[in-house]
Image (cartoon, rainbow, N blue to C red; front, side, top):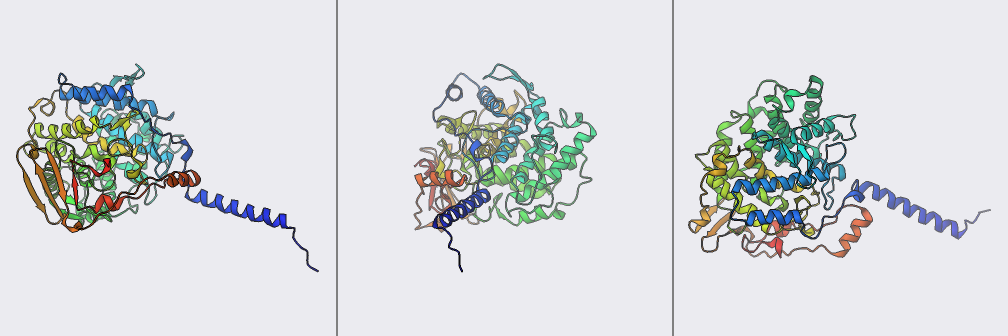
Length: 494
């Protein structure tokens, strides 16, 4: 004799199964700490206006303008540093790696700028313009480094696994350690040094994408070796990551960026990492790195217009770091790229973006000008954009009153004459127009294509609230496959 299950029980069981299934899906796919992200302000504040006025002023020197920008960024860092001191949680939309990872990015990517200030010999104690409280940069960085690398600390950055975002940040953390070695590293006790080195060493041997990620562990190795941690130097050819990275070389100092192709990662990524490897260990594959940086600087000089840059590719929020190759080459050889040219390239880019609202809430916005959710990559959180500070990091390595700051500016190629340069292996034709200062990248391989920009529709925001993870549009088609990109009409401001 069969027992009939009441219909209400069946309905309840079905609903429970659906809810449990939804909960399992949500747990699996949701971004950790989703509810803790705070959207950035929509209106420019007093601090942003002050920096903009400093950049517009004709009565301030270049160095004074950039010191005003530095103080603005320092105030933002101080305001959003967590209690442990190891993370900076800027306002903005979430990246898929989660809240804790975003905070590490904030510290690592901003901390390099603070470390460069210290390394240049400037006074490390600065009065925070927002609070009026003195900030000791050395103490601030030391506290963050020790909390972030201590497994017993609430601010611990965590264990590093393959494909882990923390692999990326180890390179910047290593740079902070190296730049402040006299003020911090050499004053740590033996156990503290072991602690910091042990966290960094986790990056070694981890699996990564076959692109710029390959260099991060190399940078860590070079830094630790310079501090006497990793033993004597080895032939660069013996480093499997470095050997694999060089296979992406396309000539003219630039590399492919698998799996997507050629883009501006060559300025803020490849050239930046190669610079630091050479700066710390000048004998590391010297001929190749020096040649590639010289060629990268020459190419980049032709990509900067008086009206911005012909931006294409992913991670556009790093846009203020485009001048990096000019600054890097000037630091290594001021005869190849003279100080006045490097500083002018820096100034043209930063003036353009500051004027168009790149600053908000003490940080760089998540977009080309202001925050633009159509072009915020799924991996980008609020702190991610501070790779855009890399051009400032290299600028502030120069001591106050040095030739870099005081020499007469020199005109970039587009300010001198028209040009048309063919880069066959890159698949680019780069043209400059002196008449209006614009630069264009034509890509013959994309002829006939007309990709459209995918909008950030309302349904995407709804899905984000349901699944608590980014559902922003993937606009790689328009970022890579247009026939032409121009500084005069950036697609990201459409």
